[in-house]
Image (cartoon, rainbow, N blue to C red):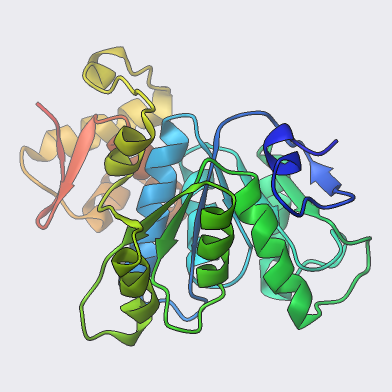
Length: 274
């Protein structure tokens, strides 16, 4: 079943092959260059996580770099994400992301493609799949796009389909942002946070009482208490030492608590919101 929003684009896919669950939740694409900087990956992960925490399903292309960071940020926030492939759904590309694809499905998201299972990764297929990434969504967010980035085609498809295009700016002389800045000059909206995106789309979120209403499980409560016990901002290694959690588990919990506004991050580390 092809979603109605996707059916409405000028060139909808004739078929859609799906592994996982394709829901009707509101969707926003977060895309960008494969050769992303650490800052760009962090930005994409944060934006995806915050959008997911507001009930948005994140759509991207499962490529390395920004796409991978977007999917991961969404999953770490407990959200659902959709990966649109330029190959068949049983031929995950790149191979390095096979485990990520499995996590996406296990977490209630989906791997989708218009191509039959086993279809290899022809270059033109990846460009065509970009119209599906944008066509599924209310908006496309571009994080780090050089002048020849495939994410620019996703933005162009979005504009043709009547979708909003948002761009995260960067250093004016950095080549990874040359395409991004051209999109802004051509009329895309400059944004710096998920809050900017949600506000521009008219999606209301109620975060004012998140601290009071957040329901914490036992592990989350333990981490929050550990952070509070230091009485000042503390680095993550100290939190791991105090809680005896595995680093990956501790990071996931801290990310969740940050999104719930229970703790906050600063240059000095993490501290309890008061």
